[in-house]
Image (tube, rainbow, N blue to C red):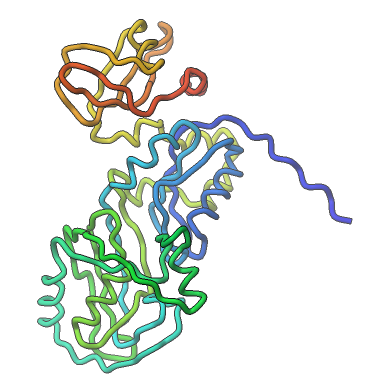
Length: 322
């Protein structure tokens, strides 16, 4: 007989965990593992990484999930290896080889082609992606052997750096560092660059080294998290407001904070801004930190509430602070 499974006692956990996602796990599998280790009631992420990809994956817990959408718009930086001369069905190493071609480009041609891919581009999303069409992920159509029409998307390649290259030998490759806008498909970019070089290619490695203000050196592996005891795991969480990078801070007194939390607009001498992080006063002399209340925007001196924390969430966050 199998021993009965121990039921995990969930608890309110609020904050952001910067995870270095391992190879082979989907973003959701990594999230569920971290959620289980923290015994968190509620969790979400700020945009997926393919199972093939490793690197920076911010995970949101509790109140932080209310602001995870804000981070979807952040610029990303990737390091990737493009194997030249071999095309696959998925544009990465997981697909079947569908074409091989000789590689006879020169270093000068590589530099010239990379220059062409700088700046604004239009990309057609790959069939092997999680983008949905009529409520169904594109990769589901692809598995069924179907190809559906996809609208081109506008993206921006801010920087495209050649880190290394090998144009001769059995496995010619380019290693690239890409700083790009949200929604950029690196598999498509790598495949398009290789096609422009006349040889075709596919990705053999992909690592996200930064997303918004978060970089790989700030991240923690699942193995390291697993090796910690519970208090150590909780100490790895960053405060919810790290997701509000670039928001202007507005602090309200106790009276106005209570009204703002109930959804009422407040008037004050604030200049117009689309993104404000709103704080209330510290709740006691021992509590030095301000309490995050939520987000807002300011128009004509009015502070207009956006996403708000609940009083219970605010209290739980304050109680968890040392």
